[in-house]
Image 1 (cartoon, helix red, strand yellow):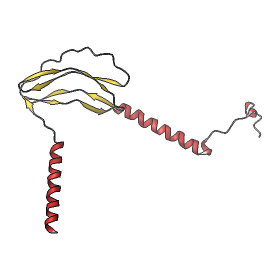
Image 2: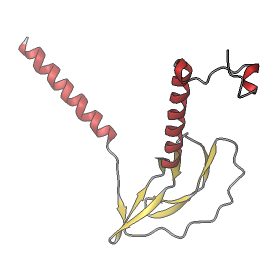
Image 3: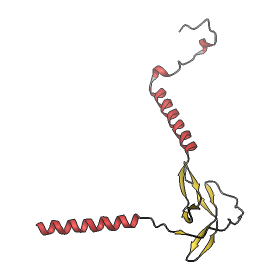
Image 4: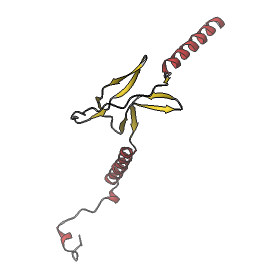
Length: 144
């Protein structure tokens, strides 16, 4: 029984260790900065598409140009393009990724608040405006 528990613990440890290693990001640096970006003509984008501009990637011993591409828009996010960061005398490539758009988040939060208020007013008769009838056209004749 004790041996079985030790084996289970060992298997769990190995599984967790290999899983953590699979999530690790590989980052390397080089001493050679990228050339100036190449100007690309952006195509006409369809609804729900965004443009990811081209960038210089490192391939063994030199930079190579990766062409820009069209990608599907994620609601509430904007595309942060690939770039190189200089830290001291070394260059690090930062891959492109989706970043939360604070302006769209604020708009979505405001819309959610408005939707909640509208739902509450529909469910609460005291907050609904009184129904109007033909007698409401004359302010002096508001008796029912």
